[in-house]
Image 1: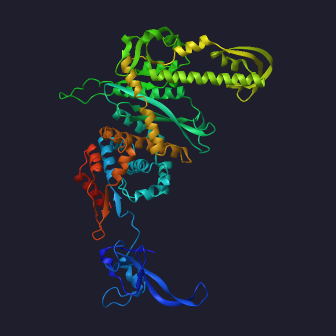
Image 2: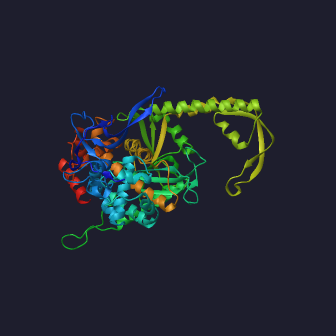
Image 3: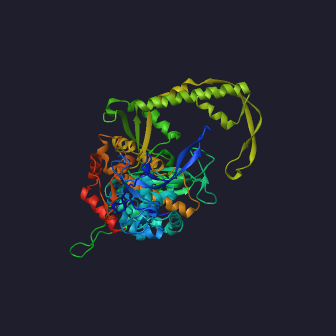
Length: 619
């Protein structure tokens, strides 16, 4: 049933012969009836009551302030105006009835005002406009803000959220409309073009460190090619999608991303990112600056110097040569299982920890040497050898755990007369010397072309074992050392500084999964999946802008100025509907914390009020 407007036009005096409950609802005692007492000793009087409205001020004694907002039942029973007959039908009171409004009476305006300014200043809206129409742009930005505000990617609840939020869109779209949009209205070609345009806009001149890493997102969607089993960290039995981000290190700005089937390994994924970066640099090289005053074309634009920082899992001879041919530098942590890693540490471990190689800023020892990385290399690379006291403690603790676990496994193998393959025996040779003999065969699963089949291999039984102190000591001497390799960073200090900030991409993934709902997918079609990943990328850009602009606030208060806390503060800046004029106005002054946050984006009280005016005009 339509509701009655709670406005000054619809206030009447509370009639006599009523009762008011603790919540302020007014009940009229229509008739008196006699009912049996519970103890069966006779009858008692009771009243048949009907609710006729609610008091205007529930916090004030209604006998003092005898005003109420009447409902339909009141108009059925009482005269509304002098000289009128009692109202008996809904049609008679239509002027007092209001349909359920599309917008809430209280609309949050602060976060929208900040998001609108950030997307304009960063040219994000401009880049989106090169690929998508205005309606699609508005909805993408609304969905991105919804992810940040609600910390969720379940678009089913978007319409409810949108009722009390200022939006980029002109109307509140239903969840059915959003479902159709993410499935059919955005194509892969549009997404790829947007990523290229955004990278070109966000790319700057000079020396730029790019942090690169990947994560996996669990998905239970069936029949979608990109959803495959891989190496999921939480549960290997779950299907997943692999997602890679390239982040500008200085401000954690996402520059591009790629998604792959869950079964693709890191080295293969890296080759495609390298190809994308090469294409972007070629586009930059081929572009020309605007014509000069004399009408002639100016010289070719300055090409930025890109240095890709990646984890050890992306190192391969092919990838590094591809980076070199593309003119892209790299700085990567060296794999500990590479033979060259231990060779370099053994050759320089004493020399590194000398006073001349001590770096007071970081409290570490570091030196740089030149060496080939692969046998086919025609050039030397820079190897930055670093010793860190905290890392030494971590390495030594892990060494002790590994030795103890291996000893326990060997002890159980002797007790149970367990059989091992030759490959399994080699894993013990790292720290232990074994005495063993061959005894029968074992069936093992084949890999590669013979995957899914088994073959028989010789089996061995361990007779005794003894720790090899020489090998353990050598491994102990290597504790605390790490090596990074680069083709363009010659300074060990610069390498340490750059690598210390490489976790910016991990922090972006953490924000996506913890604060934007990217811990799992909730779609049934591959096209919907790609659109949702695009919205996540746009949300991560806004998140990075919010974080970078408010950095100075966290210098003195890291607890109350996290990005989620800032969004909460901004959403408390609201516009309330005046029930008499039906216009939105700001009822409350900005708090001190809200002013601090808005000042980071150069937004004043007048700007907030202008945003409210835009909200009224767009109704």
